[in-house]
Image (cartoon, rainbow, N blue to C red):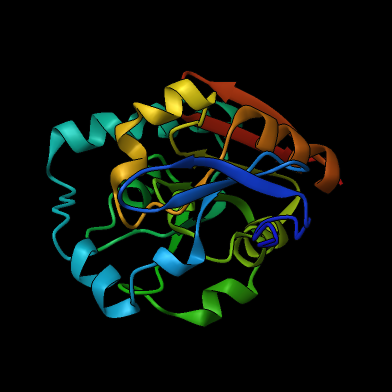
Length: 213
């Protein structure tokens, strides 16, 4: 049996299979993950990301990111804080939006802004939009995200939430070959309880977590 890449439980079972790949679901943390044998190579993965056209001047893209930026900014208050956008992609935009709100922003991306020094700092808040589903080793990246947040700080995430098997079968989100880790409400509730976080779901794809210890 393939161990869960998030909680390392051995309690995973086949959840869904199509012509592209198999998907397993962890019985402990409820993460759904693609069979590691179906992963793209780093070169193939980057080539796929190079097709993305993230432009800070694209108002539609800004409105999309505002679904996270607005509720997070409300909770951060008026003071200038230090934040990191993890997985910023080729056209960092959320970091610019939060900087425009008065915060001091750093960015990181393993392909487009690989500056490991920024991962050695703790921040008042960390954001990660449409990136967590790409994590091949989510236990590692989740540990990095939580570890970089100061006590009382915030983690703001955007990812589509997995539901039941019937919904998953029809779900376009799983068809992107770079999407390999699918989180559900149950997964985030598990992580929040395990790691000392308060979790709040905003709409269908925004998750706000606050570090309580």
